[in-house]
Image (tube, rainbow over all chains, first blue to last red; front, side, top):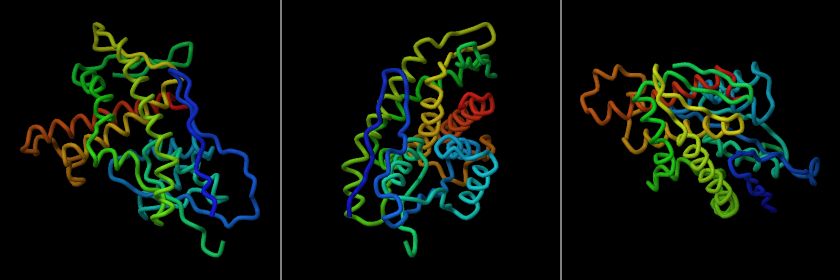
Amino acid sequence: MRSAIVRAHLMTPGVETELEPGTVTREGLAPPWHVIVHDDPITLMIYVTHVFMRVFGYANERAQALMLEVHTRGRAIVWTGDRERAEQYVQTLHGYHLLATLDPAPGG
Amino acid sequence: MHIRRDRDGGVWVVGMPAFVADTLRQLPEWIASADPAVRERLLPPAYKDERAEREWERLAHPGLEHLFKSRGEILRQDLASLKQGVLGAMLRIPEPHLSAWLSALNAGRHALFILHEVDPGDLGRDLQAVDDLAHAEALLRMEVLGWVQQLLIDGGGGE
């Protein structure tokens, strides 16, 4: 099992950059993984929506729906795909201080 | 207190009450807290599987630690120019720093929550009903950080 864990954040002094999903070499071959975001009582809902829009490029409506799912159900699958990219997304979400984990997608 | 955008895409937080300015000044210290529970929250697990999690910590955490350290430096740099105006303190946040600020404000809320052992049930509670003054102050500072965060997002500062 190859861990595809994340490239380092590239930092320019005074400028914060984000991890960008990298080149995927095994897309379509490896089983998919879920990126799951868990609820916490501290993070503001407006911020969670903002992060989903920024990280995944989701439209406001989709980001809000996912945020509400996290809030009401305690967790939501926010993205599914190859493991390498899922890990990059989780690291990026941790950079925003959201509780994010990876799970293999059932039947993947 | 409100947000004003400047020509370069940065924002001014203007009309800050002294308590808000004081709270922001302390933010870099809180997010750099060495308290194990704070570090654990800021570096949460990614995997249920122990082996995968160990690998994750080995490879992902250094990048995150570097990010958090850089973020603290960004905040200190901006806070150095915080100045007192007639109607309150003013802080300019350059556009490239906005994302760092939004994340740091969230991290600060988490750090205060942990450091002051805040009960989730106390969030949003009438502070006058909180007996412990230190506890009430932590709750108020958490509210302040959330208020600034919301202003920055509503003001388009997070775009």
